[in-house]
Amino acid sequence: MSTPARWAREEWGLLYVTVRETLLKRHLRVVPMTVAAVCLTSLLQYVQNRAWGYQFVQNVGAVRAEDPLWLALLRTPLSLFVPALDLPVWGALVQILLVFGISEVCIGWWRTLVIAYVATLAGTLYARIGISLGAHAPFGLPWTYAQVVDTGPSAAVVGLAVFVAWRYGAYLTAGAVTVAMVAEVLIKENLAGKEHLAALMAVGMMCLLVAVRHRHRHRLRLKPLRTYGRRVRRHQRRSGSRPERGSGLPPIKS
Image 1 (cartoon, rainbow, N blue to C red):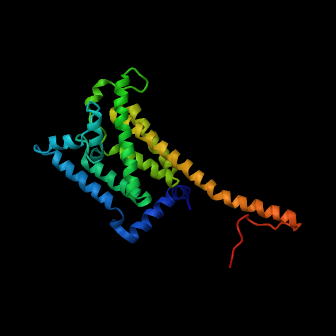
Image 2 (image 1 turned 90 degrees about the horizontal axis):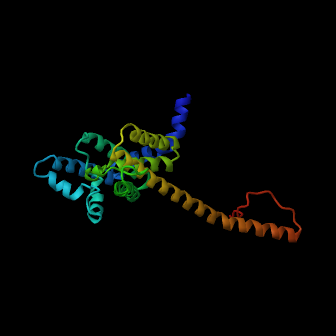
Image 3 (image 1 turned 90 degrees about the vertical axis):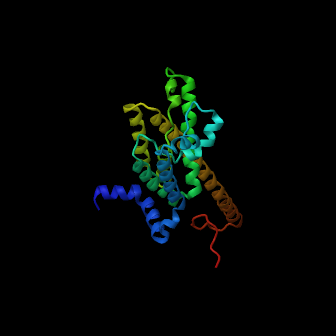
């Protein structure tokens, strides 16, 4: 096996096998939320490009930093599926289909929605904080960004891509996505790029919390086994019997 093939297998092997086997067994039935998201994004794109529907989509799904916070929070869930007017809609649809679909297969539909919402909400809140700090602050933003519409599905896509890649051991991929977002801000400084970084920071915190939670659960599972091992060794010392080699696990009962 060549070096690139070996690297790809180590990086994406587990993710590939999980997605492939699940889709072969259940086909598109395993990604109902992703199919609904693609359809909803297509519908919103169609409506907002009509004279009668543009203002309606803006009222229900466009989030700006100048809006009242309560109104922005109400619009944020739907804003995940409102594509940007200045970008081709097929790009947003492909991103949702691939990233949301892989995420739904790997971590489930409700976790996918939670991470997508957290990533989008992090960008939305950062825009407000950055504008309040001002353009001269280290993480501040100019006041003109208050009228710019938030990122739409892109922040959710970036956050999901990093989380799933980290969850399935594709650490280089997660790092590459992060580096690409940093490069985007350095090359073309705009609100969308900085909101992507805020989304990555929020998802990074979620990854840290998941890792700590799993480590804590692992310790709780090991504690009874260690206690059992100490009891066995004490019993052996009292009886004078020679300790046997073993894994420390409870004996198998037939």
